[in-house]
Amino acid sequence: MDEVNGKETIKIGNDVFVPYITEDRIQKRIKEIADQLNSDYLGRIPVFIGVLNGSFLFLSDLIKNINLECEIDFFKLSSYGDEKISSGKVTLLKELNCDVNGRDLIIVEDIVDSGLSIKFIEQLIETHTPASMRVVSLLVKPKSLKYDVKIDYIGFNIPSEFVIGYGLDYAQKYRNLRSIYILDEGESF
Image 1 (tube, rainbow, N blue to C red):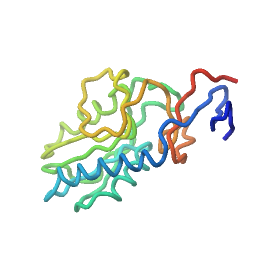
Image 2: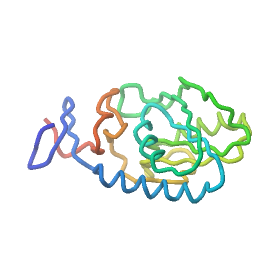
Image 3: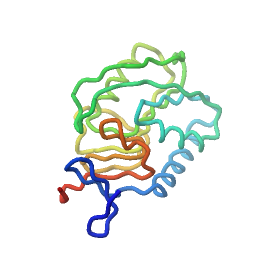
Image 4: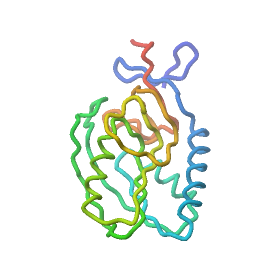
């Protein structure tokens, strides 16, 4: 990490990232979402389905605040590779291990950008008969949405800029940052 003009920054090649959402704000918002889920699913046993790799930190912190009996499973999808923009094609790399028929499903995403991954998951789930399916995403880029998808629980709406940290990567790196950093379009080296 470096400092530019008094701001903590992360430099990756010619790109500079600056702090955007702090760890404290993330944790506070996760607690609020978990409280709502605890209320909405009272008396039920939902299956939380994380979308790997990005959602693992968010799902981990979210589930720590869930007071319900529940299960956890994962999809692994790929649509970015090592790029900053989606390839426009989603590939399923890991299928679910649980039976979702008749179950309440909560899909957990780190970020919804175009909505392509959620649309892909909806189509996968259509082949089953879950009792319900809702989507929770830590981040949503409303201006980037290209598909009509419903996000039921949103952590933060953000601009259509590239972000890293807290599970979000740049070429599979920087997921371990505790806060979320945004590409600073004004800085370049």
